[in-house]
Length: 192
Image (cartoon, rainbow, N blue to C red; front, side, top):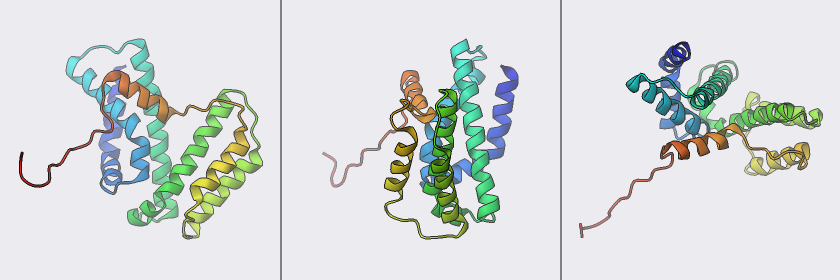
């Protein structure tokens, strides 16, 4: 366990600026990662401050979450470097497209985990289309979400109940009492 915590701390030190940039630019990618990131940080703080050992369940949550976010951030950084030549602002313009690509990879993983066959032609064509949008720096269609949803529905056709890792970590955050979506109330005018 100690090794995993040390590895996470090192990873955070290396990637925190990237994550903060995503947050500060109100990126769809930050919104995507936020539940996992918040749960991992909560567990990290609990472990670091209390020097307690995680239960087996909490260890598994931490391990799965760390593997997930590590892979997702790594993929984003590859797109940033290779597709956008480290131009963060251009990268952010395509954050929703990258989010869809990451979602498709999540779907592929889930289908494989459930031993479900998928029409790889549809999946590959969707990935190619999304990557071409970025590579060619094309304008992102307003109806992209509808297109991606339609293609994904062709792939799964009700074969599995797809509950991705982000949804699972939202539930974990709620169980741990982490407020992911807090809102600040503003009073306009005179104090009452």
